[in-house]
Image 1: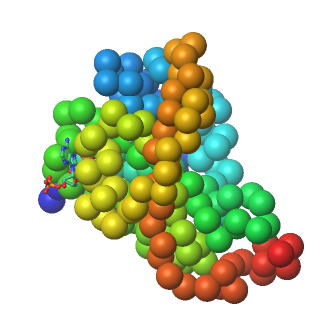
Image 2 (image 1 turned 180 degrees about the horizontal axis):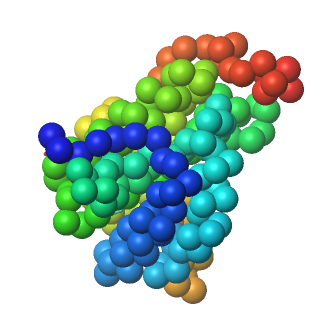
Length: 183
Ligand SMILES: CC(C)(COP(=O)(O)OP(=O)(O)OC[C@H]1O[C@@H](n2cnc3c(N)ncnc32)[C@H](O)[C@@H]1OP(=O)(O)O)[C@@H](O)C(=O)NCCC(=O)NCCS
């Protein structure tokens, strides 16, 4: 992990992030909601530009010294005013760089960002068969909040997901004024 940098994503990371996502999505373990497809680099670039300095969403990357991206975490605030203190996240690490602390470092970065922008709860959905991810989340204090049955269609089949959450503390009053006034 020593040589890997965790930083906010920039629009120029789009191609590398699409490549990473496509390779993780194509793994036989079926870890992600999407299968072998992922958004295009152009769509990714647009998204990264939109969230670059947003208080409502962020993308973090894990980068090798030569520039290769080996991890990604996306986190976005819930858009409903009554739950805008909650943000949903997704994380992936290249198969070649797992068990080196990258996933943990990305999740720590997300927690730091969330606290800064007044988010007091992080949540995620994980497939019940994804024991590595569940172990990582539990290690960081996330707790299982239940099973959503037949919640998604994946590769043409209805699949269940476990909801996990981490309470960060803090008060929703710390939310950006624009959103707070909607409550
Ligand atoms: C889940 C994932 C993000 C973990 O990333 P990672 O960089 O390998 O995780 P870390 O090295 O930071 O692991 C931190 C801790 O999590 C736990 N953990 C991670 N992977 C584990 C595994 N395969 N088995 C058991 N525990 C595991 C361990 O406690 C580990 O600490 P340790 O290595 O000191 O024992 C990675 O396996 C991945 O990208 N998988 C495919 C995509 C995916 O499943 N994304 C999540 C979708 S919900």
